[in-house]
Image (cartoon, rainbow, N blue to C red; front, top):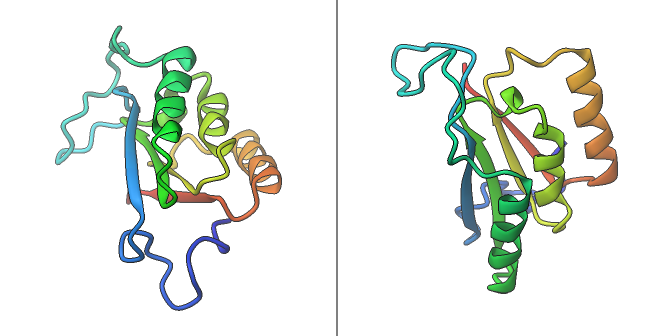
Length: 132
């Protein structure tokens, strides 16, 4: 999905001088992996950014005019957000590479279809990272 990001020799955006905006969009996770500091099953924090706050953050970052900016969306598990697709698209709309961190346990056919549809709309801009 992210095959057009970077150059053919080195797809690592950090080594190409890109700047990452790491944005934690949730603190909830559906797992309880021992090395992680997240707590499974807890209710979302009331201070987590909603779509309006995320859009304001994105717009502020975009106004900085950083030509090598890319976005990393993470948290706990982003797919626990009912609006995960809207959050993802909010950053894809910038035309910049957008990383999506997931443990992939909530990926079903519907989620896979949604990701494929986003990939079709934003070719070469999506990078999915999954922890094992």
